[in-house]
Length: 447
Image (cartoon, rainbow, N blue to C red; front, side):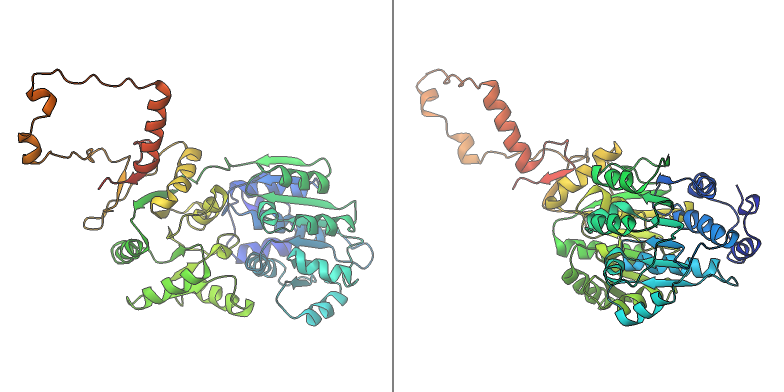
């Protein structure tokens, strides 16, 4: 389906053409007709599938095609993170160019009084994070009495950040006859479904993804590592030997993001750290420069895993494994956007074995291993490596020459003690826990 096939407002079609939006993605093809019909929508789709355009095009078309009722904000978009809200704003401004529609951005960490002044002008479209919007709502700065469209983006992330209650309170005082568009990368969580049920009225449900799977255009690999120093050596090798115009490296802590960025800078890489403790203005500036190719290596914590929609990220490297499957999917989804090819490489040590196993079990297959000559793990064995043999210990010459006392006297060998099935199972479990039994991704090598 092409955007020109839809009966959209002429100005909106012009703006879409200027931005070279021509062919609709699957998420847009499935979601836009439902949204344009006025029905509530509950959609689960892969990250990077074009959901933002799928909800903003119908919303803007409605505002341009109908007269406002009263003097009120007409469309409210709730996003879980400031980064995502900025990206929605950027796209929205391009789509409303040359129209009468006014757009405002309401985020935490930015000037509260300036935002209050913006809200007094009652903008047609507000893009906001729930926490800060609730602050203004309590003070009476907001007007959603005649709200026409409520959009909830990345609802699963709202849950993780503790925003579900705020979203429900915001919706409770808004026009109850509005249209609600509800998007989530996964609908597996009962609380997400509960929130959807409280906000939506007889929605059309569209599920375009298997929420446990990575898109087929993203190649996933695993490098088995010993420790953080080993991971650093592997990372340097990857940066030097694999071609990618833009990379995103994920870690699990602010401290490590800064340390790793400094380490890579000493190896002549222009690496910048991005984490949640940076001032919002600095975070905005970093993402702007990254998007505009001022530098092409970003070391980020989970703050960038969701909502960071930047074209051209060809490789994601999980220096630390994601703490759960959903975070893993969102991290990996930063590459392979809009159907392009991408690569995701996981540097995994023994303490992260269970995290890797959960990813592999969800996908129903072991991820391919990448073996780097001269940088193989020395402390670990990989259950997937058929070339690894069980270690054998040869007896010393002294032990070989020395016969047991009972045999030298002609006595028979002592009988073996019988082992119960329970004892055998316990021994096997203990051995698997220490060394791995071959079914797990990898385990410790015996010394």
